[in-house]
Image (tube, rainbow, N blue to C red; front, top):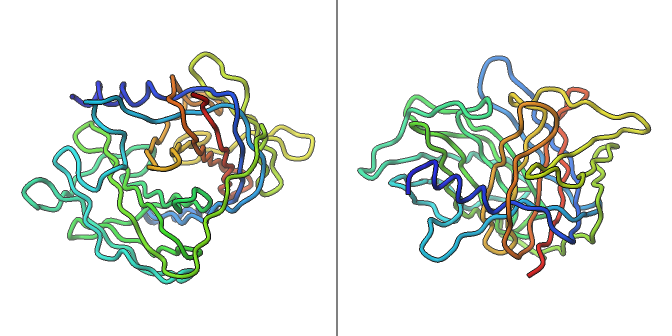
Length: 284
């Protein structure tokens, strides 16, 4: 399946649903004028949920959703370290290699960066979106903190030769891990004093509004857009980095399969990046 067909098949599984919940947290992604490095903080538990969902899925015989494998489309994600000490910054180094085992060096800019790294705990209650730095050898590195014990999924999200790729691998922080339940349903997520609302679906578009106190907030540009949305499916953690529309805080969506999903919306305001997370349930 070629890239346009694969992307179309995946986008076709995004939709509005009839029940869900939300979790909000905050993320700080300080910009450095000298390079490509951004830091992200974990999204913590809290907030309320709602009833819209971009979803992911695949029918029998189709290409599986992105992020389920470390190797796909002739590319492989090779990670030097998979074990981390909880709440301690440690170097994460990885490479993307081709079918011959050679390190891939040429990446295209996508949403203002050449490599996006999404790290989420498998209970979908801890979330980070960071941007590693590429070294002279073609590999990527970043100091990463897994805030608490558990199993995390790391997604390398990048574009090569006009095609988008997402490869995933598990990271481990040994310790007393007790998975958390997702929060109850609701339409508004609170984060850092902001109320983020997921609006009724506008055709195939998911739109959000942000209010602080009594005033509507206009997000500042962040990675070339007003906001960024990542969707993950509970269970297998099928992944989707939904592209924002050119104007406003809207994202193109489509139809969904039954399941439970997490929507992580990030936006910048007052010089900081904030994360609002929603749980969405698609009924059978």
